[in-house]
Amino acid sequence: MSHIVIPIPPHSGKQEIEIEVTINNQKQQLHYRVELFYWEDCSVPTAHRADCISEMLAHHDPEWTVYYIGTPTDKFVPITFVNKESRKLLQRLKD
Picture (cartoon, helix red, strand yellow):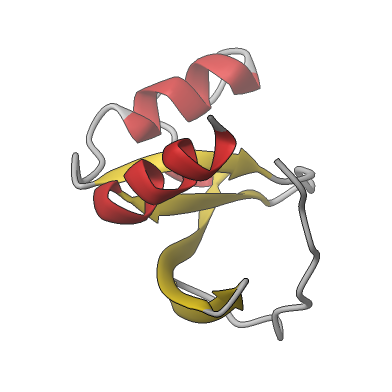
């Protein structure tokens, strides 16, 4: 599957992103969410950061699937989610 990069202005908190694309004259909508997960919110802050991310994601909305884990900073890690319908569309495009 090909990829394009779209810059998203930085904001704190959740960012709901809807993208409408036209590929070969077919319009499709994709729905993403970007969230910042702060290390200080980890219930076991001394744990490895991967364990912390896993713990935070365990309580996440099941209608959204992790799509991309961004570059972590000292304060947070940005995680991009895609909703289930968009994920199905992306899978069909991939096949």
